[in-house]
Length: 161
Image (cartoon, rainbow, N blue to C red):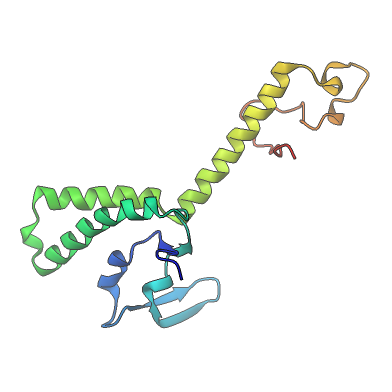
């Protein structure tokens, strides 16, 4: 198996404090309505090549995760020893986690696809070289772009084949 094939969007260093002795946690699978005891953290909150196959982003995240893991270990032993730098590490990690979850990436891709569709239809309308759109006798619906589209509409337009 290639190195870093399984890439975690919630790093293992965040899951380890919840482990019971070994590298395993108890979890609840909502879809199956099932409690799973002793699930290995190796595959939790992870996807194959989530950050890409080149490993650059995965490697860039490792030092940040290392600072976070060190800070959490330190504060677990003595929570009164928190320094402004420790709090900054926790804040930065929290912000980073907001943008690296699977759900956030799915939303980002959906917004990206929607914007692409809006731009494509807008560009099509500006060119005005579509016979279906510019010929009054033809039905506008014969154009592959829905001419009833208006900016900001939620209607999806597929990308060209």
